[in-house]
Image (tube, rainbow over all chains, first blue to last red; front, side):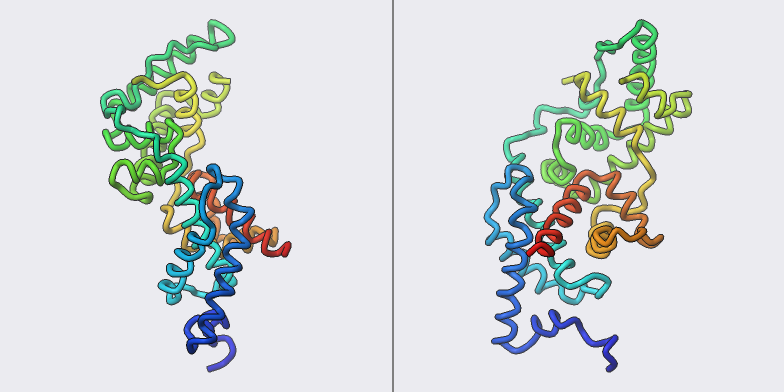
Length: 203
Length: 79
């Protein structure tokens, strides 16, 4: 085995005999706590126990050692896992009282605004035209799941929290929203409304 | 309940900013550590990682995790 194919020293230590393994785990936990101290404290209220996050992260990291492919430093990879766990927990706590229960597919993306705030009568007319076309596209091209997912985001929920409330998963909700955004965009463009025009009409 | 004026504006922004994204959040996560290191070294993003950049532009969840990861890595470098 040449040096190129030797496992990362962290992997060796974390898979090593007991005293060495315990020391590596303790060191890794310290690194995670130190890294997350600043990065999580300013997000979503920052109300999370760093020791708990680090503990969960270490377990996940130990369980995923086979997936470390050496394309980054081990500690960067480990911090990526810890960050996702920490932010996920912060989001769950921060949005725990926000519900989508009152939103139904029928009215989830209903547009009834009259284009208030337009600077000129021409802009008001343009806004009404765009919103009318947008309403039509929403009704004719989006599924109920897509409408609900987008409404969740428009209510301020992160995709991960929309997924939690709709018994789905983050990937599926992201894809639903992504596809819906593209459908609406191409529909508007087909109707002669370019995204640059929209920005101008609504600013 | 119908959308408010602000929500309509936000929806139009979401639509206007949309780009075709070949990744989902897990696909982005797989390469995020490598992307973060390249980004912190201010190196040009290699072609193989450009899909990550697009996903981060499109997905606020992954973007905020990436920003937090950067801060965590920078704070370790500072220590």
